[in-house]
Amino acid sequence: MSTINHHRLIILGSGPAGLTAAIYTGRANLQPLLIHGPLPGGQLTTTTEVENFPGFPEGIMGPDLMTAMEKQAVRFGTTVVVDTVTSADLSKRPFLLKTGSSELTCDALIISTGATSKLIGLAEEKELMGYGVSTCATCDGAFFRNKIITVVGGGDSACEEANFLSRFGSKVYLIHRRDQLRASKIMAERALNNPKVEVIWNSEVTKIVGTKQGGVTALRLRDTVNGTERDFPADAIFVAIGHVPNTALFKGQLPLDENGYIVPQPNSTKTKIAGVFACGDVQDHVYRQAVTAAGSGCMAAIDCERWLEAQHLG
Image (tube, rainbow, N blue to C red; front, side, top):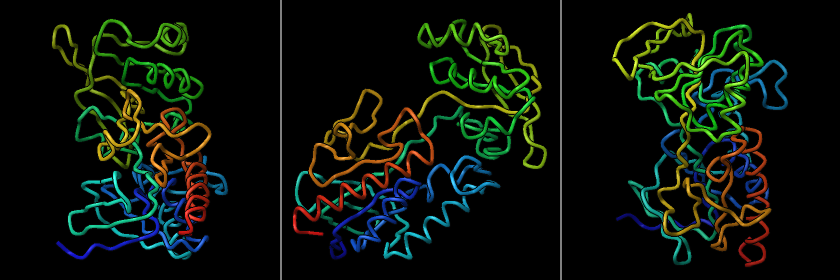
């Protein structure tokens, strides 16, 4: 095994939360080490145009935004490593992280590993992500004004997204594989009572038809009762079947809620382990926006800087 490298601060994750934390802690002269993880740039790298991040009146491509944020972090002294942490031991100090190629220790750790959207499992989802396929109505709904929009799912998130998308689409179809929604009563009623939302019961998507040039044009639906298939015209598909927070490394070490999200201390990014902080989608299952992730990254950086200073490690 290679020599253990020690750092005052390691940041896990390179989305808006992690990179904002890197910018702030870099400017505080903490010389953070940021580890990219399996998806450099986070979920925004799978988004085409971002219209709702402040400061870009004409919008900006998701990958371009993340590249600019990384350059800014590096400018202030952040070292960026493209690697994946395979284990983390927070039971001793300094904290010990192992990757496929090295062992690292740190005095403080900022966790911004994000969450992964659950997908149906179709090859076209990844191919057309950002070209008519989306996992975020708030991010992409406005691109489909007066279009036929579909939402896949049957829980609270799917109902909420269907209602939100009805502000833009000429019609919103909620596709559910069962004959009743599993959403809470109030959320289900809002969707069912929305005149622009129609539920397609007992159906699942088996294929997404479209191209990057022309976008989504149709979905192939299979009836879960009799097995018949049909093509259904649509301009967009929003997959709303949940998210999985990337917290497997910390199970049994940090408090997680019933869905696996890190539970920070109230009004803070601090966790129950002193010197460990959490920000972004790894601890936020409510907002899940680039700007809120960036804001919490700023909070984690300030909390971390103050903690290191109090330990005379700053």
